[in-house]
Length: 75
Image 1 (cartoon, rainbow, N blue to C red):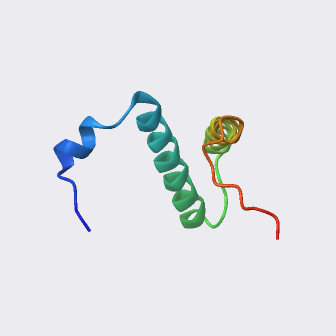
Image 2 (image 1 turned 90 degrees about the horizontal axis):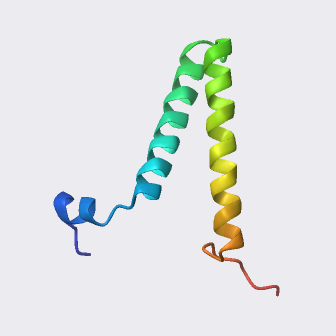
Image 3 (image 1 turned 30 degrees about the vertical axis):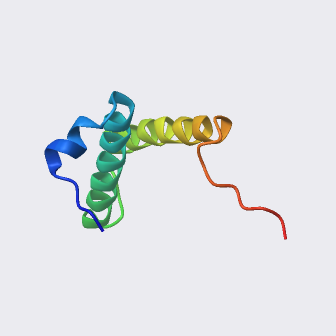
């Protein structure tokens, strides 16, 4: 397996991919906060998570519409 140098990998990132990575990282951070706060979020945190979730769902829907996801064949 060939490992890309970070500079090579960074050059291939598109703005959309960077935004998507940021959304996923922030969602992960909020889930960790949620866990550390006894499974509670502040109203601001909850609002931010819901906004990120909408962005994520829109991206996944876009990927399905553009056939960018694997769809298994029926058996």
